[in-house]
Length: 90
Image 1 (tube, one colour):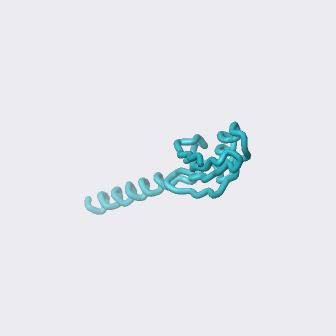
Image 2: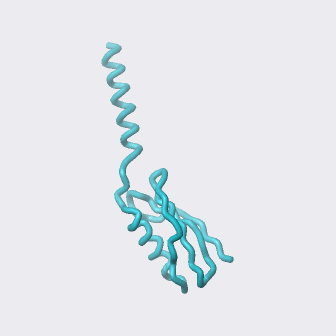
Image 3: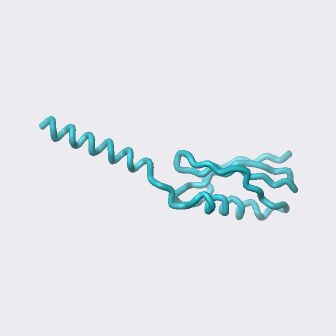
């Protein structure tokens, strides 16, 4: 009985670990495009400063020199939607 319990516990732990680390459905380039599209309504050209991936999100840092704006947007790696962000003006 203990052997079955340990096997089930091991299976359950592996299931949780692999389920939490699902691979992104969108690429880094697609996340950049989402951010550029969101900020293209502004007067200046959007420049992507950096992109990183952590905790199921792409962190996309951007700036618009003409408007003296910069910020970070958080793009969900499964849906491609912007989940939040911050923006600063000079």
